Length: 111
Image 1 (cartoon, rainbow, N blue to C red):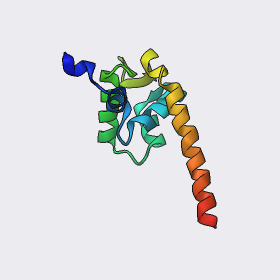
Image 2 (image 1 turned 90 degrees about the vertical axis):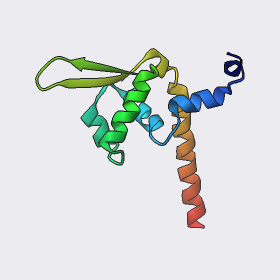
Image 3 (image 1 turned 60 degrees about the vertical axis):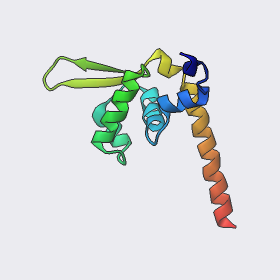
Image 4 (image 1 turned 180 degrees about the vertical axis):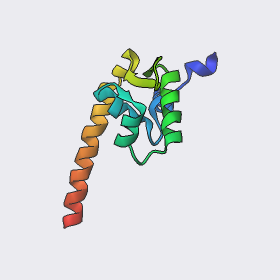
C-alpha cells in the first residue's frame, strides 16, 4: 500500500498509454468507432498480433471498448470509453507537437 502512495503519476500514465503503438491506436479510435481491419489499414506498420495485443491492453485498462456483434461473419468494433476520451487533449497535444517537429526538421534539413 505504501508503494502505491509513492507512485509517479507520469509512470502510471506511461504504463497505460506508453509504448510504441498505443497512442497511435488511440489517435485513430478517437476519430470514430473502428473495426479491426480498418485499424490495420490505417496502421499498416503494426503487425496483426501487436495490434491485437495493444487493443486488448487498452480494453483491459478501460480506455477502449470492444463490442462483439453476434452475426456471421463476426463483427467487432472498437470505440473510445469515457476514460479514453479524457486522453483526447493529451493525444491531440502530442499530434500538434509532432507536427511542429516535422516542420522544424524540414527547416533544419533544408539549411
